[in-house]
Length: 115
Length: 118
Image (cartoon, rainbow over all chains, first blue to last red; front, side):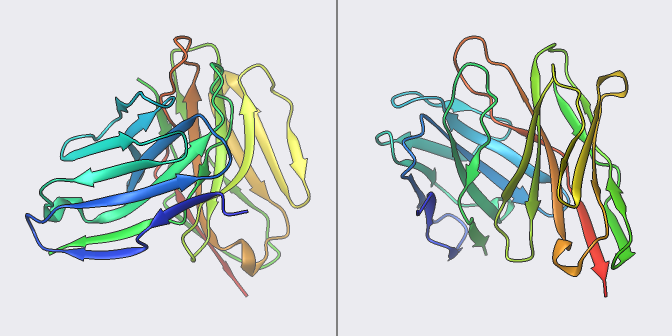
């Protein structure tokens, strides 16, 4: 079982470059999420998609855009990368019900460095 | 707004000692869910447990146990007879109910780095 697959695993960008982080899940989950993890900060929610065709901002959305391409795929785009966006990015999915009690399953992360 | 506090930034114990990781949360909702995740040195996040706000029973799974107390808004995690393989960062997280059908994602604490020395 692949679960949640993120690509790439590592990336180095120069300030001002753009890139898209890809995420796909094969668990038929409705909801998908993007988090960033910074040292000493835990994980913070960037954007989420409760269902196919919907996206909403999380705690730290500035500088990012997302696309829920279909039920399986949820991409995160940095239009003009900044050093402050150096982080480890995690994609997650869950089989959402209104109760919100389903555990989220995480990908292995993308380590992104902006020079 | 919801908040999760893990006051212990780092804990170091010798193997076979028991260790408790503290988690205190804040929420205005009466229905919510609490989670613990483990992040080993390899970096992935591993789901450990889920608990809803109506279930205050303690849970034990092998060497792991969890103590949920609504009166103190705490959801503490104890590892009994710790092992080197338990070395990891442990995150406590909170999810509130989204009655509109949406999902707000998880609010994470900053994590506790647990070091088990041989």
